[in-house]
Image (tube, rainbow, N blue to C red; front, side, top):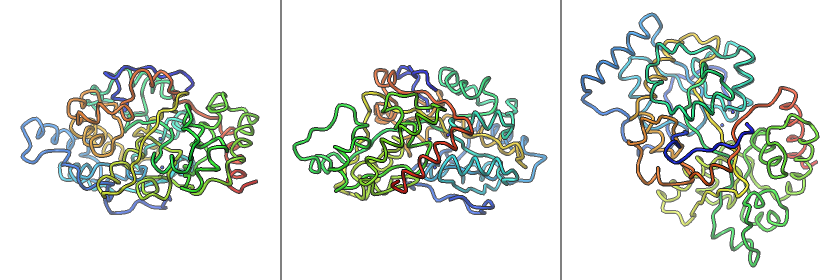
Length: 403
C-alpha cells in the first residue's frame, strides 16, 4: 500500500508504494547503495547520548530483538547497523515484493514481525480489521518532526494518525530511456500524456522492441489503468476493473517484463519504458550513472497526474517487541536519519525537520519533491474493499495470461 487531489507547495513536500519468507532471518539487509554516509555521526554528542539512553530505557523490559518486514531496496546503508550499535537491539530484516504478500501475512497472524511497511492502499483495511497495533506515542517523541500537512493527508486512511508513521512517499508513473524510446518510435512523437506509452497499443507496439516493464501487482497496475480511462483509480466497481482489463489486453502482447522492482531492468537496459514507482526509477537513474552506463533513465510526470502513495511503519497487532519497534520509529524520525534515506534512495520524506539535511539537488528535483503545479494533478491514496481486491486480482491474472 484517495480520491482527493493532493495539493502541496514545495515547502511542504517533505511527503515523503514491493518473495516472502516464513521466518525472520538473522542477517541485516544488504542495502541498495553502499555509498551512503553513516546516518549517525561517530563521537555522539550529549544530546545523542541522551537519546540513546531514552531508547535503551524504552526497551528495558523486552528481549533485544526487532523483526522488520520491508520492501526491497528501501533502507539506507548504515541505518540498521547504527540503530543496533546505539541500542543493542539485534535487527532481523526481511523483504516482501508487494502489498498483497504482506497483507496475507498479517491476515494469517503470527507473522513473527514487529514492524512492517504497508502501502496506504492496504493500511486502511488493516487498521479497520484490527491487524495493526495502536502507537504508544509517549514512546515516540520525534513524531513532532513530521509535517502536519502530510500527516493530514495520511489521516484519510489513518484517522488521528494513531497507527502509521510515514517511511517514505512517491508516486506511480512512467519512466523511460529517452534515446531508446525515440529510436523505437521513429517519426512518432512522444505523447502529451505519458500514460499513453504503457497503455496505448499504438505506442506499445513500437516500444516492445526495446522492452516494456510493468510492476507485477494488481493494485499497482489496475488503478493507473482505470485512471487513464478517466475512472476513479480506487473504484470498487467490478465493471471498472473489467474496463481496465479490456484496455490492458490490447497491450499485453507488447509487455516483456513483470517485476517487483524495475531498478535493474531500467538501469541495465532490459527495458526502455516502465510502469512503476518514481522513487525506484530515480534509483535506477543514479545506478546507471554510477555504472557509467549509456542508459539515461528519466522519470516522467503525466499530464493527467500520477498516483501518490505512502509507505508507512506500522506495528502488527501480534508483535512480540512493540517497545523495540517504537524505539526504532523514534530513531528513524531523527532528522539526520530520515534525510539519509532520502539522500541515498531519492524517496521523499515526511520528516519536515530533515529537509535542511537533504541534498539541495534532491530537494530541487521535481520528480522527487514534486512541484506545486504537478502536485495538483496527483491522485491521493485511498483503499479497496476485499471484494474489489479479489476482482482486480482476477482481472490481472487474466491479463498476465493474455486472455
